[in-house]
Each structure stands twice: as C-alpha cells, then as structure tokens.
Length: 375
Picture 1: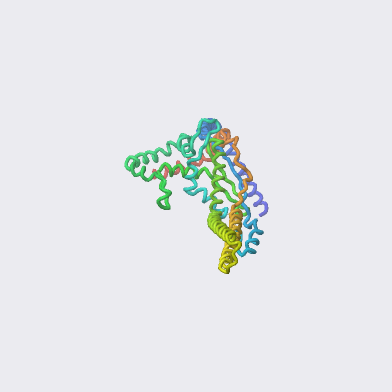
Picture 2 (picture 1 turned 90 degrees about the vertical axis):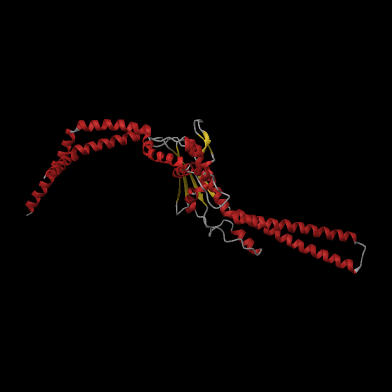
C-alpha cells in the first residue's frame, strides 16, 4: 500500500511537471504573438501616458485641540464671582469628525468659487470656478464617454434656457436654500472630488489633501480650504460667546454712562451747597450719594462681567495648529514611465496567459460548442 501511494504521488508530480513544461512550451511557441502584444502595449502605453493629464497633490496637516479646556483657572475665577461660564469644550457639538461634512457642504464650496488662483507658469490667473470650468484637461476618451451627456444637456438647454437662467442665481437671503445652475452643480461636484479631508478618530489629527492639474493652484486651494475651515469652526464655536460679549458691552456702556451722570450730579450739588446746613440739603446730598454708590456698584459688576465675557470668547476660540502647511508639489501623478510599464506588462501578461493556457481551452470549448450547435 505504501509503495502504491508513493508511485501515485510520483505520477501526480510528474503530471504537474509535464503541465508546467507544456505551458512553458506553448508560451515559447507563441513568442512572436507575445512580442507583438508587447509592442502594441508599448504604443498603447505611450498614448495613455501622454493622454492622462498629470495631477499634483498638496496636503495640510492640522492638530486639533484636546477636549479639555485650557482655561480652568478662568472657570474658577468666574465661580468666585458667582458667574457660570460653562465647563469648557467637553460638550462641544462640532467635533473633528464633522470636518469632512463641513468642507463638502454647498455653502463652503460656494465660498471657494471666488478665490483667486494662479498657475505656476503664470499663464493662468483667474478664479477657481473659471479654472475648473475652462482650464481643466482630460484624456481624449473622456470626451467620447461624455459626448452623449453633453448632447442631452444641449438639447435640454434649448428647451429650458430661460428657466435655467432664473434658477442660476444663488439665493442666500430669501430663505434657507441655494439654487444652482447645472454648470455650477458640475463645478461643485468636481471641486468636491478634488478635496479630501481625513480625520484620525483617535488623535483628531486632520489631513486636508487637494488635487489639481497645477502644483501652485493645488497648494493655494489647500491653504485656502484650511483657512476657511479654521474660520468656520471659530465662528461656530464663538458665536454665542460673542453675542454674550456684545450684550455685556452694552450693559457696561450704559452702567458707565449712568455712573458718570450720577457722580457729576452729586459733585455739582455738593459744590453748590457747601455752606448750607439745612436738613433738606443734607437729605438730598445723601440721596445723590446713595445713587452714586449704587451706580458705582452696577458699573463695577458690569466691568467684571465684560472682562469675563471677553475671556469666554478667548476660551471658546478653538486651537487648530497647522503642523504641516501647504507645500507646492514638485512631482505629479501618474508618472508616464509607470503608465507605460503597467500597460506593457498587462498586454504581455495577457499574451503569455493566452498562449500558455487560454488558447488551448478556448479552441477546445469553441469546438465543443460548435458540435453541440450542430447536433
């Protein structure tokens, strides 16, 4: 039994070896076809390499603040004054996980439409909207793929030109909605596909990556997106604190004005009645003095409230540290050499697989199919 198993194992190994040798033999016999496919792959790779526009990526790394507030002493000071200014940022609603949603929102993208961009060679100096609309290059096969869509769009524009112009205005004041034209919507989608925001859930480390067909424009847009995001987060976080500060400033100004008026009235009456010792004058002087003291207390408390409101704004202002600023990239992608190598390899691999295995099985099953059809 052992000898039979050994012989069977040897026979299986021999069959496997014969199969590999057979495939190598088939591939060698079809070497001319493989060579032709490689040559065709070189030409196709060259066409693809020079047809695909080069893209440049520029990234900005942001380190978000920790969840705990850095102004713990401020909360203690406010508590001593009998004022509650909150428990810091532990309860903030705008977390770093929402940054991608902010950047991809329509209002945020609309703000980017009007930024000024300039190409590295200086030939392009326009807005980002016009750059994406007029200066984007694409592979020639993209025009073939999108030709039906363009034709349908032209036909639709002939029937709804007036309506499209009417809906093209950006409505930001007459309701909580924004209406865009088809062109603006396409540019917004293009812009969204070229901006990527990645947030590490554990460290809240944020990376903003922008891809453009010009290195300087890529770095410019990445830097602008970072600044707009910082401004958006700051405005969101400090909105209520700024309103409280404005209210405290109004109270302070009124209290100061009232105190100064009461103080002036007291001083004027005291100077005019220095030699009078009547009870009425004394009573009036005491009343004016009490009014002045009360106004001074209100004025002092409002000044403290104003200082705390100012500190509250500072406390609520987020800290987004730019660890790695936007850098103008030197190299783009894809590399023409890599595209050429990949395409040539794919053509060569297909030819080898066809000659070694595919051709034999193809004609085998093809003949079986023909026989079945005849029968």
